[in-house]
Image (cartoon, rainbow, N blue to C red):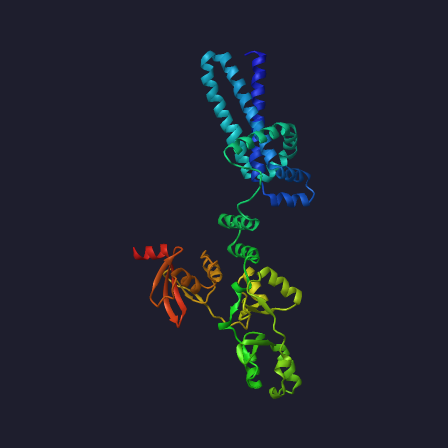
Length: 428
Protein backbone atom coordinates (compact mmCIF):
# COMPACT_ATOMS: atom_id res chain seq x y z
CA UNK A 1 0.00 0.00 0.00
CA UNK A 2 1.11 3.49 -0.82
CA UNK A 3 1.83 6.24 1.71
CA UNK A 4 -1.34 8.03 0.58
CA UNK A 5 -3.38 4.93 1.38
CA UNK A 6 -1.83 4.68 4.85
CA UNK A 7 -2.60 8.33 5.39
CA UNK A 8 -6.23 7.69 4.40
CA UNK A 9 -6.42 4.80 6.90
CA UNK A 10 -5.07 7.14 9.60
CA UNK A 11 -7.75 9.69 8.73
CA UNK A 12 -10.46 6.99 8.97
CA UNK A 13 -9.12 6.03 12.41
CA UNK A 14 -9.23 9.66 13.56
CA UNK A 15 -12.75 10.06 12.19
CA UNK A 16 -13.89 6.97 14.11
CA UNK A 17 -12.25 8.41 17.24
CA UNK A 18 -14.16 11.65 16.67
CA UNK A 19 -17.36 9.63 16.23
CA UNK A 20 -16.60 7.92 19.55
CA UNK A 21 -16.28 11.35 21.15
CA UNK A 22 -19.50 12.75 19.67
CA UNK A 23 -21.68 9.70 20.44
CA UNK A 24 -20.33 9.23 23.95
CA UNK A 25 -20.64 12.94 24.76
CA UNK A 26 -24.27 13.04 23.65
CA UNK A 27 -25.19 10.02 25.78
CA UNK A 28 -23.24 11.17 28.84
CA UNK A 29 -24.53 14.75 28.79
CA UNK A 30 -28.16 13.65 28.46
CA UNK A 31 -27.85 10.93 31.13
CA UNK A 32 -25.81 12.88 33.70
CA UNK A 33 -27.49 13.79 36.98
CA UNK A 34 -28.15 17.53 37.05
CA UNK A 35 -28.31 17.43 40.84
CA UNK A 36 -24.82 15.91 41.16
CA UNK A 37 -23.39 18.34 38.64
CA UNK A 38 -24.91 21.31 40.46
CA UNK A 39 -23.40 20.01 43.70
CA UNK A 40 -19.98 19.74 42.03
CA UNK A 41 -20.34 23.27 40.66
CA UNK A 42 -21.12 24.60 44.13
CA UNK A 43 -17.89 22.97 45.33
CA UNK A 44 -15.90 24.87 42.69
CA UNK A 45 -15.59 22.29 39.89
CA UNK A 46 -15.14 24.37 36.72
CA UNK A 47 -15.84 21.47 34.36
CA UNK A 48 -19.18 20.88 36.11
CA UNK A 49 -20.02 24.55 35.59
CA UNK A 50 -19.37 24.15 31.85
CA UNK A 51 -21.52 21.01 31.72
CA UNK A 52 -24.40 22.85 33.44
CA UNK A 53 -24.06 25.69 30.95
CA UNK A 54 -24.26 23.17 28.11
CA UNK A 55 -27.36 21.57 29.63
CA UNK A 56 -28.98 25.01 29.76
CA UNK A 57 -28.68 25.09 25.94
CA UNK A 58 -29.51 21.42 25.52
CA UNK A 59 -31.06 21.82 22.06
CA UNK A 60 -28.00 23.56 20.62
CA UNK A 61 -25.66 21.09 22.32
CA UNK A 62 -27.43 17.98 21.03
CA UNK A 63 -27.77 19.52 17.58
CA UNK A 64 -24.03 20.25 17.40
CA UNK A 65 -23.10 16.73 18.53
CA UNK A 66 -25.49 15.15 16.02
CA UNK A 67 -24.11 17.30 13.22
CA UNK A 68 -20.58 16.29 14.21
CA UNK A 69 -21.54 12.62 14.35
CA UNK A 70 -23.15 12.75 10.90
CA UNK A 71 -20.15 14.51 9.35
CA UNK A 72 -17.49 12.15 10.71
CA UNK A 73 -19.52 8.99 9.98
CA UNK A 74 -20.17 10.08 6.40
CA UNK A 75 -16.53 11.01 5.87
CA UNK A 76 -15.31 7.75 7.38
CA UNK A 77 -17.65 5.74 5.15
CA UNK A 78 -16.53 7.64 2.02
CA UNK A 79 -12.80 7.23 2.75
CA UNK A 80 -13.17 3.53 3.66
CA UNK A 81 -15.03 2.90 0.41
CA UNK A 82 -12.27 4.65 -1.60
CA UNK A 83 -9.53 2.64 0.11
CA UNK A 84 -11.20 -0.73 -0.46
CA UNK A 85 -12.08 0.17 -4.05
CA UNK A 86 -8.39 0.76 -4.73
CA UNK A 87 -7.49 -2.59 -3.17
CA UNK A 88 -10.32 -4.90 -4.36
CA UNK A 89 -11.86 -3.05 -7.28
CA UNK A 90 -15.66 -2.87 -7.64
CA UNK A 91 -16.25 -5.57 -5.01
CA UNK A 92 -14.58 -3.18 -2.55
CA UNK A 93 -17.94 -1.39 -2.17
CA UNK A 94 -19.39 -4.55 -0.61
CA UNK A 95 -16.39 -4.96 1.69
CA UNK A 96 -16.52 -1.28 2.61
CA UNK A 97 -20.19 -1.58 3.65
CA UNK A 98 -19.38 -4.50 5.98
CA UNK A 99 -16.22 -2.94 7.43
CA UNK A 100 -17.64 0.53 8.07
CA UNK A 101 -20.85 -0.93 9.49
CA UNK A 102 -18.93 -3.08 12.01
CA UNK A 103 -16.55 -0.26 12.95
CA UNK A 104 -19.37 2.26 13.35
CA UNK A 105 -21.65 -0.02 15.38
CA UNK A 106 -18.86 -1.18 17.71
CA UNK A 107 -16.64 1.90 18.10
CA UNK A 108 -19.06 4.75 17.42
CA UNK A 109 -22.29 3.41 18.89
CA UNK A 110 -22.08 0.54 21.38
CA UNK A 111 -18.68 1.12 23.02
CA UNK A 112 -18.87 4.90 23.70
CA UNK A 113 -22.52 4.81 24.72
CA UNK A 114 -21.96 1.86 27.07
CA UNK A 115 -19.14 3.72 28.80
CA UNK A 116 -21.11 6.96 28.91
CA UNK A 117 -24.30 5.44 30.30
CA UNK A 118 -22.37 3.72 33.11
CA UNK A 119 -20.21 6.73 34.01
CA UNK A 120 -22.26 9.73 32.81
CA UNK A 121 -20.90 12.34 35.24
CA UNK A 122 -17.23 11.36 34.81
CA UNK A 123 -17.58 11.20 31.02
CA UNK A 124 -19.40 14.55 30.94
CA UNK A 125 -16.73 16.29 33.01
CA UNK A 126 -13.99 14.84 30.78
CA UNK A 127 -15.55 16.13 27.54
CA UNK A 128 -17.00 19.39 28.86
CA UNK A 129 -14.48 21.79 27.34
CA UNK A 130 -14.17 20.07 23.92
CA UNK A 131 -17.97 19.91 23.60
CA UNK A 132 -18.19 23.61 24.41
CA UNK A 133 -15.82 24.35 21.52
CA UNK A 134 -17.85 22.10 19.21
CA UNK A 135 -21.06 23.93 20.15
CA UNK A 136 -19.45 27.30 19.42
CA UNK A 137 -18.08 26.11 16.05
CA UNK A 138 -21.33 24.49 14.88
CA UNK A 139 -23.74 27.03 16.42
CA UNK A 140 -24.43 28.90 13.13
CA UNK A 141 -25.15 25.64 11.32
CA UNK A 142 -27.28 24.18 14.14
CA UNK A 143 -29.27 27.42 14.40
CA UNK A 144 -30.04 27.33 10.69
CA UNK A 145 -30.96 23.65 10.86
CA UNK A 146 -33.15 24.32 13.91
CA UNK A 147 -35.19 26.92 12.04
CA UNK A 148 -35.48 24.55 9.08
CA UNK A 149 -36.77 21.74 11.32
CA UNK A 150 -39.26 24.07 13.01
CA UNK A 151 -40.51 25.21 9.63
CA UNK A 152 -41.04 21.63 8.48
CA UNK A 153 -42.85 20.72 11.72
CA UNK A 154 -45.10 23.77 11.39
CA UNK A 155 -46.30 22.39 8.07
CA UNK A 156 -47.72 19.47 10.07
CA UNK A 157 -49.16 21.69 12.80
CA UNK A 158 -46.47 20.81 15.36
CA UNK A 159 -44.76 23.40 17.55
CA UNK A 160 -41.62 22.95 19.62
CA UNK A 161 -39.75 25.27 21.90
CA UNK A 162 -42.44 26.06 24.45
CA UNK A 163 -40.54 23.91 26.99
CA UNK A 164 -43.80 22.83 28.58
CA UNK A 165 -43.23 19.73 30.71
CA UNK A 166 -45.95 17.11 30.95
CA UNK A 167 -44.97 16.45 34.56
CA UNK A 168 -44.59 19.02 37.29
CA UNK A 169 -41.26 19.36 39.08
CA UNK A 170 -42.76 17.54 42.08
CA UNK A 171 -43.93 14.65 39.89
CA UNK A 172 -40.51 14.39 38.27
CA UNK A 173 -38.83 14.27 41.69
CA UNK A 174 -41.30 11.67 42.89
CA UNK A 175 -40.72 9.57 39.76
CA UNK A 176 -36.95 9.75 40.26
CA UNK A 177 -37.20 8.62 43.87
CA UNK A 178 -39.60 5.79 42.91
CA UNK A 179 -37.14 4.64 40.26
CA UNK A 180 -34.24 4.71 42.73
CA UNK A 181 -36.36 2.74 45.20
CA UNK A 182 -37.17 0.15 42.53
CA UNK A 183 -33.45 -0.14 41.74
CA UNK A 184 -32.65 -0.61 45.43
CA UNK A 185 -30.79 2.67 46.00
CA UNK A 186 -33.49 4.18 48.24
CA UNK A 187 -35.26 2.36 51.06
CA UNK A 188 -39.06 2.35 51.34
CA UNK A 189 -39.07 4.49 54.49
CA UNK A 190 -36.91 7.13 52.83
CA UNK A 191 -39.09 7.05 49.71
CA UNK A 192 -42.22 7.51 51.82
CA UNK A 193 -40.68 10.41 53.73
CA UNK A 194 -39.70 12.15 50.51
CA UNK A 195 -43.15 11.57 49.04
CA UNK A 196 -44.80 12.88 52.19
CA UNK A 197 -42.71 16.04 52.03
CA UNK A 198 -43.77 16.67 48.44
CA UNK A 199 -47.41 15.98 49.29
CA UNK A 200 -47.55 18.74 51.92
CA UNK A 201 -48.45 21.27 49.24
CA UNK A 202 -51.11 19.03 47.68
CA UNK A 203 -52.82 17.73 50.83
CA UNK A 204 -55.17 19.81 52.96
CA UNK A 205 -55.82 19.72 56.69
CA UNK A 206 -59.13 18.05 55.88
CA UNK A 207 -57.17 15.05 54.55
CA UNK A 208 -55.25 14.40 57.78
CA UNK A 209 -57.50 15.77 60.53
CA UNK A 210 -58.94 13.71 63.36
CA UNK A 211 -62.67 13.68 62.60
CA UNK A 212 -65.04 15.12 65.18
CA UNK A 213 -66.72 11.71 65.63
CA UNK A 214 -63.49 10.37 67.17
CA UNK A 215 -62.39 13.62 68.79
CA UNK A 216 -61.97 13.54 72.58
CA UNK A 217 -63.52 16.61 74.19
CA UNK A 218 -65.03 17.74 77.50
CA UNK A 219 -68.14 19.74 78.48
CA UNK A 220 -67.20 22.89 80.39
CA UNK A 221 -70.42 22.60 82.41
CA UNK A 222 -69.51 19.21 83.85
CA UNK A 223 -68.32 18.84 87.42
CA UNK A 224 -64.74 20.24 87.61
CA UNK A 225 -63.46 17.13 89.40
CA UNK A 226 -64.82 14.94 86.60
CA UNK A 227 -63.13 17.17 83.99
CA UNK A 228 -59.82 16.95 85.83
CA UNK A 229 -60.09 13.15 85.92
CA UNK A 230 -60.94 13.05 82.19
CA UNK A 231 -57.97 15.23 81.30
CA UNK A 232 -55.57 13.20 83.43
CA UNK A 233 -56.87 9.93 81.96
CA UNK A 234 -56.60 11.16 78.37
CA UNK A 235 -53.54 10.23 76.28
CA UNK A 236 -53.35 13.82 75.02
CA UNK A 237 -52.10 17.08 76.57
CA UNK A 238 -54.62 19.32 74.76
CA UNK A 239 -58.35 18.64 75.11
CA UNK A 240 -61.09 20.60 73.25
CA UNK A 241 -63.67 22.23 75.49
CA UNK A 242 -67.28 22.85 74.43
CA UNK A 243 -70.34 24.49 75.91
CA UNK A 244 -74.04 23.62 75.42
CA UNK A 245 -73.36 21.48 72.30
CA UNK A 246 -70.24 19.58 71.16
CA UNK A 247 -70.13 21.74 68.03
CA UNK A 248 -69.77 24.93 70.12
CA UNK A 249 -66.04 24.79 70.82
CA UNK A 250 -64.96 27.52 73.25
CA UNK A 251 -61.31 26.67 73.84
CA UNK A 252 -58.57 24.14 74.47
CA UNK A 253 -57.64 22.85 77.90
CA UNK A 254 -53.91 22.16 78.26
CA UNK A 255 -53.01 19.54 80.87
CA UNK A 256 -50.04 21.55 82.14
CA UNK A 257 -52.14 24.67 82.61
CA UNK A 258 -54.78 22.62 84.42
CA UNK A 259 -52.24 21.05 86.79
CA UNK A 260 -50.69 24.43 87.59
CA UNK A 261 -54.12 25.91 88.34
CA UNK A 262 -55.05 22.85 90.39
CA UNK A 263 -51.87 23.16 92.44
CA UNK A 264 -52.54 26.89 93.00
CA UNK A 265 -56.08 26.03 94.17
CA UNK A 266 -54.77 23.63 96.79
CA UNK A 267 -55.82 20.57 94.74
CA UNK A 268 -59.48 21.58 95.05
CA UNK A 269 -61.15 21.21 91.60
CA UNK A 270 -64.17 23.16 92.85
CA UNK A 271 -62.11 26.35 92.97
CA UNK A 272 -61.06 26.12 89.31
CA UNK A 273 -62.31 28.52 86.67
CA UNK A 274 -61.94 26.25 83.64
CA UNK A 275 -63.06 28.88 81.12
CA UNK A 276 -60.28 31.13 82.40
CA UNK A 277 -57.73 28.35 82.17
CA UNK A 278 -58.71 27.22 78.65
CA UNK A 279 -56.69 28.60 75.76
CA UNK A 280 -58.51 30.35 72.88
CA UNK A 281 -59.63 28.06 70.08
CA UNK A 282 -57.94 28.50 66.70
CA UNK A 283 -60.07 27.66 63.66
CA UNK A 284 -58.68 26.97 60.18
CA UNK A 285 -60.51 26.16 56.90
CA UNK A 286 -60.48 22.53 55.80
CA UNK A 287 -59.03 23.61 52.46
CA UNK A 288 -55.77 24.91 53.99
CA UNK A 289 -52.76 23.06 52.56
CA UNK A 290 -50.54 21.19 55.00
CA UNK A 291 -47.56 23.29 53.93
CA UNK A 292 -49.41 26.51 54.79
CA UNK A 293 -50.70 25.07 58.07
CA UNK A 294 -47.20 23.96 59.03
CA UNK A 295 -45.93 27.48 58.47
CA UNK A 296 -48.84 28.85 60.52
CA UNK A 297 -48.08 26.47 63.38
CA UNK A 298 -44.48 27.65 63.41
CA UNK A 299 -45.42 31.32 63.14
CA UNK A 300 -48.04 31.20 65.92
CA UNK A 301 -45.97 28.75 68.01
CA UNK A 302 -49.06 26.58 68.40
CA UNK A 303 -49.57 22.84 67.84
CA UNK A 304 -53.36 22.51 67.74
CA UNK A 305 -56.15 23.87 65.53
CA UNK A 306 -59.81 23.15 64.81
CA UNK A 307 -60.80 22.42 61.21
CA UNK A 308 -64.03 24.00 59.96
CA UNK A 309 -65.91 23.68 56.68
CA UNK A 310 -67.27 26.46 54.50
CA UNK A 311 -70.27 26.87 56.82
CA UNK A 312 -68.10 27.28 59.91
CA UNK A 313 -69.01 23.90 61.37
CA UNK A 314 -66.22 22.08 63.21
CA UNK A 315 -65.12 19.01 61.24
CA UNK A 316 -62.22 17.87 63.40
CA UNK A 317 -58.80 18.82 64.72
CA UNK A 318 -55.35 18.97 63.18
CA UNK A 319 -52.11 19.03 65.12
CA UNK A 320 -48.48 19.64 64.33
CA UNK A 321 -47.86 15.96 64.95
CA UNK A 322 -50.43 15.03 62.31
CA UNK A 323 -48.51 17.02 59.70
CA UNK A 324 -45.12 15.68 60.76
CA UNK A 325 -46.50 12.13 60.60
CA UNK A 326 -47.35 12.72 56.94
CA UNK A 327 -43.60 12.99 56.37
CA UNK A 328 -42.00 10.54 58.78
CA UNK A 329 -44.88 8.11 59.38
CA UNK A 330 -46.65 7.29 62.64
CA UNK A 331 -45.09 8.73 65.79
CA UNK A 332 -45.93 6.89 69.01
CA UNK A 333 -44.95 7.73 72.55
CA UNK A 334 -45.51 6.09 75.93
CA UNK A 335 -48.94 7.73 76.29
CA UNK A 336 -50.34 6.85 72.88
CA UNK A 337 -53.15 4.34 72.76
CA UNK A 338 -52.10 1.41 70.61
CA UNK A 339 -55.10 0.97 68.33
CA UNK A 340 -54.21 -0.90 65.16
CA UNK A 341 -56.63 -0.36 62.32
CA UNK A 342 -54.66 -2.49 59.86
CA UNK A 343 -54.42 -6.23 60.56
CA UNK A 344 -52.66 -8.36 57.89
CA UNK A 345 -53.90 -11.95 57.67
CA UNK A 346 -51.96 -15.13 57.00
CA UNK A 347 -53.70 -15.67 53.65
CA UNK A 348 -52.52 -12.32 52.25
CA UNK A 349 -55.72 -10.41 53.01
CA UNK A 350 -55.88 -7.40 55.33
CA UNK A 351 -58.63 -6.60 57.81
CA UNK A 352 -59.02 -2.83 58.02
CA UNK A 353 -61.14 -0.51 60.14
CA UNK A 354 -63.30 1.69 57.95
CA UNK A 355 -61.91 4.86 59.55
CA UNK A 356 -58.31 4.09 58.53
CA UNK A 357 -57.01 6.81 56.16
CA UNK A 358 -56.16 5.57 52.69
CA UNK A 359 -52.72 7.17 52.85
CA UNK A 360 -51.90 5.27 56.07
CA UNK A 361 -53.05 1.99 54.52
CA UNK A 362 -50.97 2.65 51.40
CA UNK A 363 -47.92 3.31 53.51
CA UNK A 364 -48.42 0.30 55.74
CA UNK A 365 -49.02 -2.16 52.88
CA UNK A 366 -47.06 -0.38 50.12
CA UNK A 367 -50.25 -0.13 48.05
CA UNK A 368 -51.38 2.66 45.75
CA UNK A 369 -55.11 3.03 46.33
CA UNK A 370 -56.32 6.48 45.14
CA UNK A 371 -57.11 9.08 47.79
CA UNK A 372 -58.39 11.91 45.60
CA UNK A 373 -62.11 11.21 46.12
CA UNK A 374 -62.09 9.97 49.72
CA UNK A 375 -59.94 10.23 52.82
CA UNK A 376 -60.76 6.93 54.56
CA UNK A 377 -60.94 3.42 53.18
CA UNK A 378 -64.67 3.29 54.01
CA UNK A 379 -65.19 6.50 52.05
CA UNK A 380 -63.40 4.99 49.05
CA UNK A 381 -65.67 1.92 49.06
CA UNK A 382 -68.81 4.05 49.34
CA UNK A 383 -67.60 6.33 46.53
CA UNK A 384 -66.91 3.42 44.19
CA UNK A 385 -70.01 1.42 45.16
CA UNK A 386 -72.24 4.51 44.83
CA UNK A 387 -74.18 3.22 47.83
CA UNK A 388 -73.76 2.35 51.49
CA UNK A 389 -73.06 -1.39 51.30
CA UNK A 390 -74.36 -4.03 53.66
CA UNK A 391 -72.26 -6.45 55.67
CA UNK A 392 -71.19 -9.39 53.53
CA UNK A 393 -71.20 -7.50 50.22
CA UNK A 394 -68.06 -7.72 48.08
CA UNK A 395 -66.68 -5.25 45.53
CA UNK A 396 -63.66 -5.39 43.25
CA UNK A 397 -61.86 -2.31 41.97
CA UNK A 398 -58.30 -0.96 41.60
CA UNK A 399 -56.96 -4.52 41.67
CA UNK A 400 -58.35 -5.35 45.14
CA UNK A 401 -61.37 -7.19 46.50
CA UNK A 402 -63.26 -5.38 49.29
CA UNK A 403 -65.53 -7.43 51.55
CA UNK A 404 -67.66 -5.60 54.11
CA UNK A 405 -67.24 -7.35 57.47
CA UNK A 406 -69.17 -5.11 59.83
CA UNK A 407 -71.44 -2.10 59.56
CA UNK A 408 -72.62 0.30 62.26
CA UNK A 409 -75.68 2.31 61.29
CA UNK A 410 -74.66 4.07 58.05
CA UNK A 411 -70.94 3.60 58.61
CA UNK A 412 -68.61 0.83 57.42
CA UNK A 413 -66.91 -0.31 60.62
CA UNK A 414 -64.51 -2.90 59.19
CA UNK A 415 -63.74 -4.61 55.91
CA UNK A 416 -61.45 -7.21 54.44
CA UNK A 417 -59.20 -6.25 51.53
CA UNK A 418 -57.54 -8.87 49.35
CA UNK A 419 -55.30 -8.19 46.32
CA UNK A 420 -56.96 -9.74 43.29
CA UNK A 421 -53.90 -11.79 42.33
CA UNK A 422 -53.83 -13.28 45.86
CA UNK A 423 -57.55 -14.05 45.73
CA UNK A 424 -57.20 -15.72 42.33
CA UNK A 425 -54.23 -17.79 43.45
CA UNK A 426 -56.14 -18.93 46.53
CA UNK A 427 -59.16 -19.91 44.40
CA UNK A 428 -56.97 -21.99 42.11
